[in-house]
Each structure stands twice: as structure tokens, then as C-alpha cells.
Image (cartoon, rainbow, N blue to C red; front, side, top):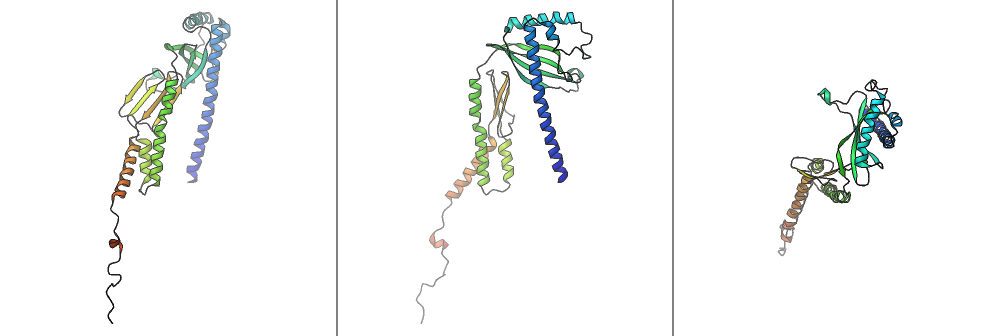
Length: 277
């Protein structure tokens, strides 16, 4: 038991520290991208190079003049599509490991996706960062520019979707108050059996998946940039089933006939005939 507790607390501490490290790196990725792109938009290519990991083994043979020429072309594409006034936010960062070596993230590097936007359109940078220096090894625009969607429908659907976990919690409370055995199995059914799943994204894309379960009481929400803002809602089949069982049990109990006074009186408990003298 003590060993299990130690493993749990060590795992918790490792998770907390790794989470803090990820948050710190997230700020580094966003700040580096913003500094690099702002210098690029100003045409200050020498300053932009300071944000690039030119000492990395992947960039040691790169000619600075050739790199500046490439940066100039990249700037022209960026300015033509988005202008020079941009805002930035980190979408996600990842390391990919695959059995296919060509799909792996290079050793000691991280791929970050940073959203950038003007007043009307947005795009996403795909940036390869050096883990040691936190500088840029490669940058390109992922996909085509897209119009910024209204987030009002998305958040309205999120608020509406919150009724699903509220319903499931209500059913769990009712199960707890019941006289059933093995309640923990019913709790699991309510928490896990949420399917089919309806998914809505901020880009106004709706999908329906028949055999796709939503755990953690039936809802998941992601807010990773405009394109990654997605809410998924599972139909609470487990909660609906056990609520139906609870209602049915209540109806059965209420419809059972009440015993009459004759049925509850002791038979011949009192001799009603006159006593013989």
C-alpha cells in the first residue's frame, strides 16, 4: 500500500512538473514566432536570423544569403495574404513517433502550430523548433488562409452541451439514493456510455459518429485556435437507461396494492365471542 502511494505521488509530481515545462515552452514558442515574424514583416532579415537555430546540425550548411532570399519570398506571400498587423496564439505542440521513420519528428526537436490572424483572416504556421535553443529550424504556412469564424454559435452550443454532464450527474445522484446493489457499475455506465457522438466545430462543420463514445460524462471541448475549436457531445444512453429503470421501479412500487386492515390484523388474535362462564 505504501509503495502504491509513493508511485502515485511520484507520478503526480512528474505530471505537474512536465505540465509546467510544457506551459513554459508554449510561451517560448509563441514569443519566438512573434519576434521572428515581426522582424520579417519589417524587412529586417538580419534580426530575423537571430531567431533561427543556425548552429543546429540541420542548418550548419545553410548559406545566410540564400536563407535571406528565401525569407524575402516568404514575407511577400505573408504580406499579400495577411498584411503586416498580425496577432499570434499557440495552437498545439507535438513530437511524433511512428514506425515509419519519415514521419518521425527529428531528434531533439518539437513541431509547434501557431495561429496568426488579422482582422478578417487567419492562418497557421507550422514551425520546427530546436529543443535546446528554442529557436526556429523551419517555418511554413499550413494550409490556405481562412475567414475568421464567429465564435458565438460555438460557445452557445458549448453552453447547451453542458446540460449533458448535468443530466448524467443528476442520474448518478438518483442512483446513489436508490437501494440498488453494485452502484459503482451503474455509475460507470452513466459516465462512459455516451454515444453516438455529434461534433460541431467553430468552422461550422457538423459530423455524426455512430460508434464513438464520449467519456467523462458525455462532453469534450477543445479550443486550440479557430480551426481547432471543437465540441463533441455524446447521447447519454447510460444515463437515459438507468433513469428509465429508476422511474419504472418507482411506478411499480406505487402501483402495488396497499394491504387492507383485514390483511394486517392478526387472525383470531382476539376472541370476539362471549366468554363462557
